[in-house]
Image (cartoon, rainbow, N blue to C red; front, side, top):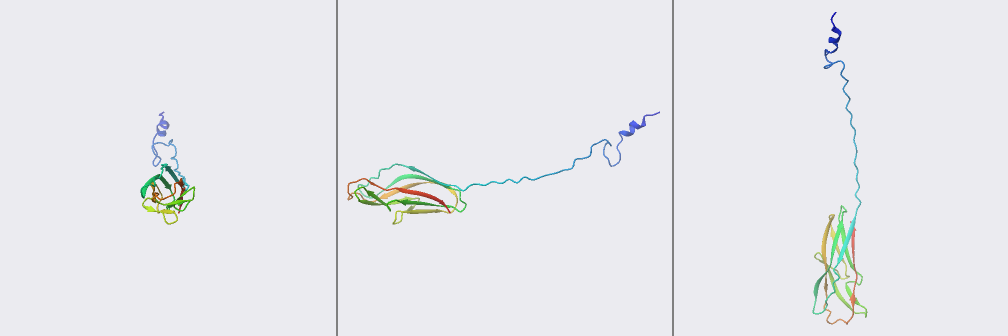
Length: 155
């Protein structure tokens, strides 16, 4: 008797691949992952005060007094506002005053000592702040000062 059963077990059957004993193919499956991120709106200003003493003798002078770094990621841009506590005047302890103009990126203060610069896009920039002070030769001997506030605001 011939062992024909053993021989038949390894013969491929039509349409079933190389062997009857081969495992069934796995079914494919997929899924999706949604990634979501949120970026907080952030506007900031950093001031590097040069601590400059303004020399008011001998005529009008323009002096750089600070560097301002502005940064804002608001999609519609932002506004920079510089304002003078004393309305664009250096005021002395004895009541005298000397007018001055703030100069920031090509713009000068208005009559109230204020200055506004509008940016239409988000970004980061560094600009110098300068003061053009009037002639102090005829001013009363005194210590004069003012405070400039710099504000950044998203549009």
